[in-house]
Amino acid sequence: MFELKLLCPEASVESLSDALDELDALSVSVEDADAESAQEQALFGEPDMPPPKEAWQRSRLVALFAQASQAQEAAVMLAAQSFFEGCQVVAISAVPDQDWVRLTQSQFAPVEITPDFWIVPTWHEPPAQAREVIRLDPGLAFGTGTHPTTRMCLRWLATHPVKQQRVLDYGCGSGILAIGAVKMGAHQVDAVDIDEAAVTATELNAQANHVALNAGLPELAQGQYQTVLANILATPLKVLAPLLCCHVATGGHLVLAGILARQEEELIQAYAPYLTLSVVDREDGWILMTGEQNTLP
Image (tube, rainbow, N blue to C red; front, side):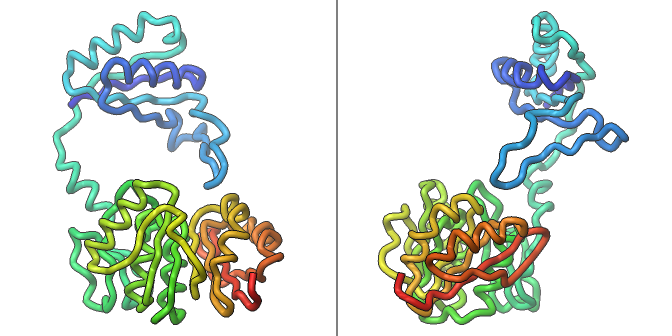
């Protein structure tokens, strides 16, 4: 494996990335060329907002190629293009062979939800104190337990009685909340998502954890539930307010996550016609909000 490193201004990043893709680069990454210096720039977007810019003022592109000759040819061809003005080739170098699977796995450790409830990747042994375990490996679908919103939802499930309840996980992602509900004793759990890949991931993860649940597209959700979970983002949660509240049985609970602390009042107002929301947990700038359905929607 060989990497071609390029330095370019922000305006050239997209053109260079597209060209490298056409030149059969195995991957292309973009980094801040001034990282860890006084000129370093923060470049990120909030969860429901796009990033403010596509790249840094001075960006470093790193393209991987299978052969040294491919990297060298790419450097020559790029240098001849008009869009390469202001760019430069920094280096072409060999990438040491590594066990990439083992390296990736080493970055994911068991996640504690409560002292006796853990999320554990399949390559780890559960901690000795774990009485309840969800086996889940990082994958394409959202929700592996490493994000505060997922942890807060699971903490709520672990500390509130859902035994023998009918539970809905709306926007199930990996199915982690649905699996958690089953493990906490729920009688029937429906997990729905608009993404068919998420539905498949939920089914596979449920099988791996030896739990029975129903996974499908949103139309699977029918009737009312004693607990409705939705770990999405603030904007879709506001749009979904009437739908989600209609699924909450009288005396049941709505549990919402994916909400930044500053969005608390927005959610309270969006749900005010249906039920009263309040913040019950906070972590790293995120909040968990719940409401009880006291009247028929």
